[in-house]
Image (cartoon, each protein chain N blue to C red):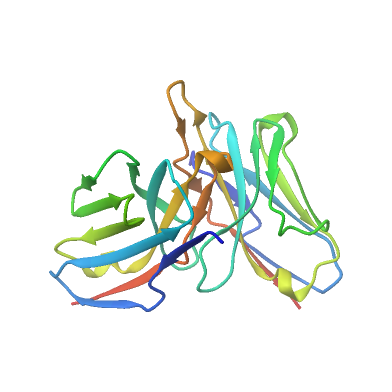
Length: 113
Length: 118
């Protein structure tokens, strides 16, 4: 079966440190991988998109890597701040599935001051 | 505000009643998606439209669920004979879709409709 796995345990991190989240998938060949941020009671907000032929993407304090051999993406928040506390979702866009996004379960991040 | 809007934000209903939710996407977006999300889980795909055409419906979706997008603008999601298991956040999202060189599926989500079935 096809799975997208994110660590369901919350990640507690001290302000200023780097938070690293993992997204693993099986039995997919995604064209794109995306990361979203979701705050309680709100819809997800797009952060970054990385293509299958890209290894790394950066945006301000965020960095995403994509390893199609390992079937894994890592999401880094550097110099983390309490305002970064949220749930982070990875999502795969698969051409064979009509390009719709399939989401992982999300990882909650709590940045402590 | 030119984002995706959903109405209502909250809906409480009794088991067996019908409910309808509305989604107004970003005006130039031709793809519209419905997702369902329960606490602690990621959004689960329900259905999507390309303009007014409903292109896919999740096999997990029962016949009690129906969605429409007349004229390719706003969309409605109806749940008939609600059950307690239908309690969830219903999220609508829109995207540009095909943009000449690639299908851009960067989704813009609304704030969702929280459904509670008693």
